[in-house]
Image (cartoon, rainbow, N blue to C red; front, side, top):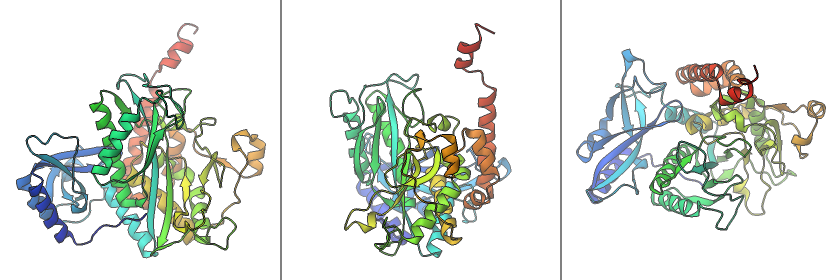
Length: 450
């Protein structure tokens, strides 16, 4: 269930150099992520690898979203030896191609504040100081379409369909095999609710490993789709009237080998730590929403009626609640976890995991009181009934989410001033562009009558 990374960088570097030579690697792609969660890359040859592992590789960060200003553009990509993997879809006729995920640093070797991977590491270090290790297991959903120019589906299949209706079976199979070739374990895969919608669930891991894996997963899904002549998208809500794609994120804290969320004395088998963590997630859910659901389109998914949670509450069985606690299975104490159901798969996982953890830890540190679970279908409740139970809602659009995040000390602290300010500025620009655009819906509704 749990993974770890070796702290012996010298030994790892020696191993990488040997593996690269043995596997006839000719090029190494150095990956890193910008503030919005877009994967960036540049390639080096095998001859440059030893120097890159020792000193990093310099590049101009001024054109990367949320990175350096033009006057401070020189930054360094330091490849993490533990992330060395061959890219299985690349031809090996003229030598192999590998990838390594990088930490971004300043020329003096200090961590760069604009690096989302550093942000997650910093939040994990805070958890470690409190004695915790943070584990996550995200469920990333996505769609296959005929091309990127439209939403023509490949099938009319439904949830868990195992028929000729599921045209994505071979694509999912090849994707899973590729992920496993890259050392990323998969729990299961299946057709999702909407036509041409699919899900592949990655096996639980520590949050840093999982963020790296999630970035790799998104690229692999797209690469395999392209090989098959179709297009894959993690857009949260590409088809009106159908379910959108979520990234339900299962979370737990461990103290050593013990799951800090489990208590056999509690009727729900949850510890006080778990209740306070849930309370933190609920209390700060509105202000972290801009990070976990960062696009204008994200809020087309977060509407009642499509299995996407909008009501701030928690439950055991109720999937209309924002936070769900899967029921305990005897002998599976380490599987005790909480599931946040609002994030979507187009977020930046490094930042999303950071703010989830920060919210949960805040609840633990300050002893937040957890409200009682709500097992009734909240979608069916009247507004008055929800108000009576104190059930609030997530922001209804990106603008509301921006207003919430701008005043959040918790998110600013979790992301750091640099990324916080760059992220909010980018979201304001996105909202203004959306707000001033004239849509096809407006033309269809008004042009002929007004």
